[in-house]
Length: 111
Length: 112
Image 1 (cartoon, each protein chain N blue to C red):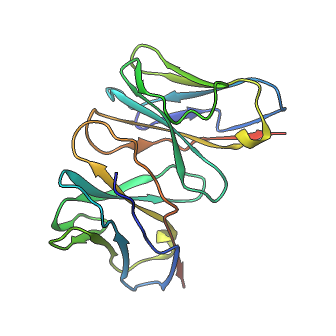
Image 2 (cartoon, rainbow over the protein chains, first blue to last red):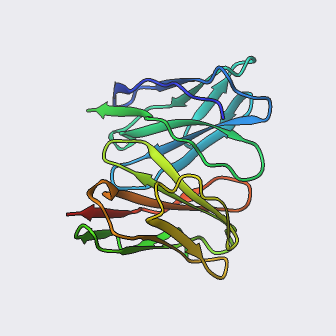
Image 3 (spheres, each protein chain N blue to C red):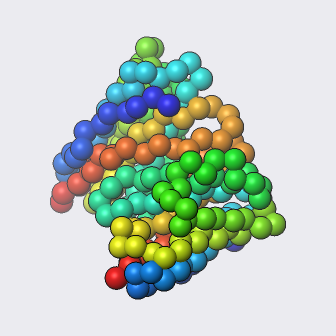
């Protein structure tokens, strides 16, 4: 599975847009990019998954360039409750997968 | 149930004792996973079940760790002769064979 690299931490303020970029240079043809969110004392929560171009849901948008060697999770107008750790993972489409988690990006949203 | 349920939510035990951690997956989810998360760390994969079979046990740290799943539903993770380094949050997740994984809130294990 492709290794991912993302910033250790980020700071933002309420109402701002936050973009977290993840590098996955060795992504394979059949791999998808998946993002999870984890609040303290909770298990990770699936946010969004994509293969290429752009995916949007009610929580976030995911931008994936043509070469797919990186991806950007975009959180519009963050609030204090978006303070969490965000994990970028590369997963094989179909079948089971282990979800190899890295250290994630710790996002702190300030008033 | 509506989500993945784990029990107990917290467990304090003495070094050398055995512990059992339980996971109730989402009804109908055939795949079940156990992960471990030490303080301030990312998640560490332990074991994967498909139905009652465990095709991937590669993440179990030692032979003190074992897990079983019965009826394609409930799973129990057992740690024998606990050590202080076993202290962590143990997370269970379930999914359909393909698709997003749903995590429980975890069991916080403290070995004194």
